[in-house]
Image (cartoon, rainbow, N blue to C red; front, side, top):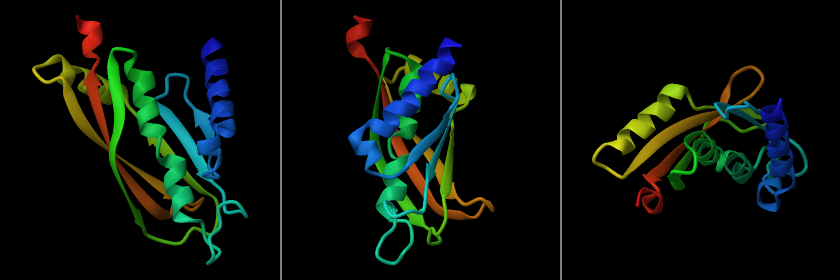
Length: 156
């Protein structure tokens, strides 16, 4: 119950944070364990460009922080997480609400921890998310490179 309340609070925080609010995107679902997050980018006056389609900056801005925040939440305080690189490939103009579903499996979290328990103290992970319409047509694909390292100050 407390986890659901906490994720509901996070959705509100996304809505009111000025940088995220400016994207026009909406976080519509956060799993209690942060294994899945859904984001919608509506086709409306706030997200439309001159050509009447969804502005690419709105698409990218709405998905930009999600994988990093998911990793921060899933890994815990002993790890440092940063966005390192990103790219977006536009495939089709967005003329209706687009949805991005982010998934971060338990196996992926375990793999990140295992990689950092070895000889290396930092790694880069690549994640991909598609922005799709209700019919499942992909309008854009975003690739994110996330840098994860151990928090050296906590090891001492």
